[in-house]
Length: 312
Image 1 (cartoon, rainbow, N blue to C red):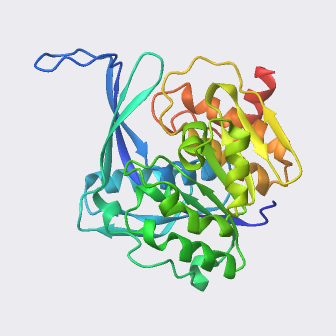
Image 2 (cartoon, one colour):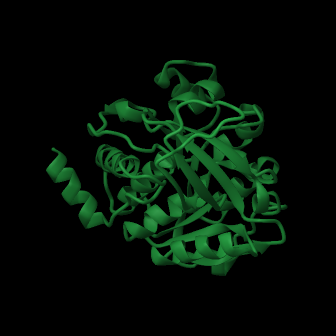
Image 3 (cartoon, rainbow, N blue to C red):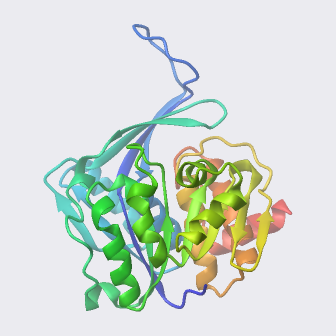
């Protein structure tokens, strides 16, 4: 798949409060931690920010609250040149997540859906202003958008009908409906992203390739499985390939999958092969997890390419 223009990114937009380190819970006591800090969060906003930082024209669809958290999020996204013309304002508070991060970089999320409840009450209408300058539509975690669970298949169909190529990052389903809500989208997806746990829950298969092939039998095009510290694997109809991760010490894995997807799509917009895109996306993900906060470690394309050269 090739991306020939800007990217229209759809997803939840939120603010993360990260608490680190939290290695155990003892109710009724006080736990001292090293840091409590606020960062950009939300699957849609993390991916759009990554694209913008890498120099790819990115337009974001979503909603924030009419509050201080919403203002802060928009300011951060503007710093990465993300087009916010189609970000709405909600009467509900901005979507917020408290992430408890342990010393190994793993995390537990406490999530307030907030403004994500109101957004996308109907399938997306791809108007001429929305489509101006873009060639690709990316759906970031439909499970985090209550209304989109119902309307995603029609939104994806309309994206294709509007002439856009499509990608879809599954995310984790806290409601446990998985394929019941996702299956209708798959025939409209050119490139599907899943992490290994999501792939297992969606397909019933523990093996990443078996999971990917299961998604393809249900209509998905090419599939990328994110394998954490093992890198990633790419499955096309003709072949499968694995790409190792860069060896790093993880500080915080929050949002790494969103940043990975942004890096992969950015590389495709530069006419990269899947192998090149996978290596670049692995680097973006590695840079993300070395800093506290989903996008704190994201750098420009030139800086990322320099990091790759220095990392071997």
